[in-house]
Length: 242
Image 1 (tube, one colour):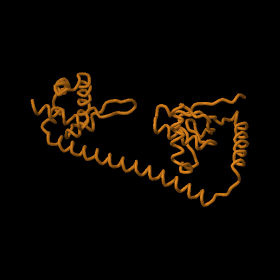
Image 2: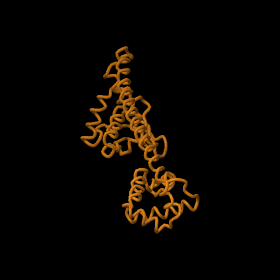
Image 3: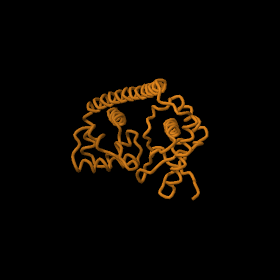
Image 4: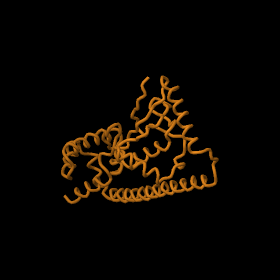
């Protein structure tokens, strides 16, 4: 059996060893080197846990460094070189992991977990926790700002209630013409008009906000709003001036 590496997406791999075991600055350095060379010089060893998921058997530091590289640059850091333990190579790879890691452990000396080790672990954990907390606070602040902006836009749209009749009563050709007059492209305007007609046949619109929430266009496997809150406000403002 010839041993060969494979490329696996980082997001499909998990690790049981805590990330806080390793210093953030060391992971940052390693991640930068991985992105610079576009690969890991020492492939990690993983075991399949499901059809599309794996678990690290050996190479925890390399895994977390690669995961950090992916956070920095999702395109360059998407994949990592690995040895996958399968039924046909399990015995060979497992023995290699045991032999080489045992040697590495002996070379580093048999030292019990000391107070210094504990302090280092806590320092790493606190540094990582602080970074994550900062990111969460920034995200919360951004989300709160966006929520307030949406509330303000909804309030402004509510004040333009007279324009709701466009979406409630006009046929799709006239709706499309109205949208085009507000700067919407012809293709998108007719697409929106057809969706508006389809939606109101199921249930009549109660507000312009209702139009925004219900009229959605396919976007890959999901659907997204055909008209955003901001776009709706711009459209009705243009209509108000005519």
